[in-house]
Amino acid sequence: MSVEATKFDYIIVGAGSSGCVLANRLSADPANRVLLLEAGGSEKGHLTEMPLAWFRAMLTPRIGWGYLSEPEPHADGRRIPAPRGKVIGGSGSINGMMYSRGAPADYDQWAQMGARGWSWADVLPYFRKSEANWRGASEHHGGDGPLTVSRNDPHPTIYPAMIAAAEAMGFQHLDDFHGSVQEGFSTVDVTTHRGRRGSSAMRFLRPAMARPNLTVVDQALTTRILVENGRAIGIQYERDGESRTAHAAAEVILSAGTFNTPQLLLLSGIGPADELREMGVPVVHDLPDVGRNLQDHHSIRGLYEASGPFTFDRELRADRVALAALRWQMFGTGPLAQMPIGAQGFVRTREGLDRPDLQLLVSSVAMDAKVWFPGFRKRRGDFLAVASVLLHPESTGSVRLRSADPRDKPAIRFNLLATEGDRAAFRRIVRFARDLFAQPSARVLIRNEVQPGPDVQSDAEIDAFVRSVIGTAMHPTSTCAIGTVVDETLKVRGIDGLRIADCSVMPVIVGGNTNAPAIMIAEKAADMILGRGAVHEELPARNAA
Image 1 (spheres, helix red, strand yellow):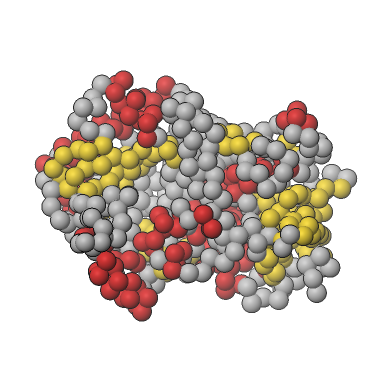
Image 2 (cartoon, rainbow, N blue to C red):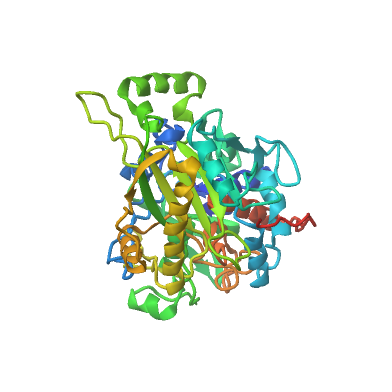
């Protein structure tokens, strides 16, 4: 039977980190007929499965949307890359696999802003439900969920040196960023399973695809939500050059992500009425905040020349890569199954903050390093790269239509560095990184600072450097926020039968990577959709420090 001839109960738009979870949870009841639509194709292959290949996967056009921001007025007019996965698994199939939730205070802030049912005590059970953590089950972690969370092996030289440097500055050496304390330094947790990417596509969707009540259609670009008498009744999509429709008896659920979810709402006539008319889109429902409040973690990179050949660049020699690839293919082990991250810290860069404002990652290789071999390609050299991520930026941006054509990319404006508070934060961040590498144990790892460079010292010089390199951590959120676009049950205000479950619903961005929260949002959404009671646990408070 064709999709168009079938009446589904639930239609999920977008097979990303959230959509794959929803497809699994909603189809677990054989009475529910579920359709999952994805604009991209299969996620299978070495490029998306091998952990070390993530950066190349992120930049591969055939599995990405190819988004760039509009010229950023506070970042030297540059257009900032905004990679998003156009593939089964969405951005969870091309990301860096970091498992991070943010601080408990982030979710309590959501509740304080009016998002009832989204406090830390409300969401922690859903983080645990999804998770199979390498530490086992505890009050902080799940032990038997679908999502495998593994420990990234610490670098034998860089890790102890950076931990000692952090301790010299008064920061704790943590076993777990998601335990009773978040502020400090440790190694990272990653979503890998037996040495391969453990995306929600692999861990939630693939095991569910044998169910007869779950239909997955890829290469399908959703172009419009069908609304009749104030209710979403289905969707229109394009596949193989043809326009098709699918109808939902219960709900249409948008899990297309922070850029594509508001774009689809706008294309469907749901959004700011004046902007819709300007684009020639008939107004179905005036909802002014669709596409507003875009947030992302501002990020800059530093670079240090290493003092010796202990970095990951030595593993990129062509013959070593070939042997490592064979080992990974056969056993799922070795350097290609790991991330070249030397250490991670979540810290507060000034007094008076109740939670970390900086995520700092020290990598054992330059980001532009490539496979090399004498006589074939020159070696990049031994470097330590430092990613400094502002966790709670003040600046907000927008996602708008560029035209009424669903094939046109949306107009994305991050508005990076728009406030003096954000600019001042990066002055602190640059100086914090320098202080960290000035500690004796870290100082022996490096020869010199390459970027920003020793000549960049004054506030004005730091500001100019930051403007020239600022990007994002590729964690976009909040364009369909709880309280303005959706209610606390994620139902779109003013339209029946339409719900959103992805990172676009965050009232404010969390202080950590966003893949785990995207999965949590879907877990909680599934319970709400299925009419299950709210889960809430009174747990011991977790401190920032």
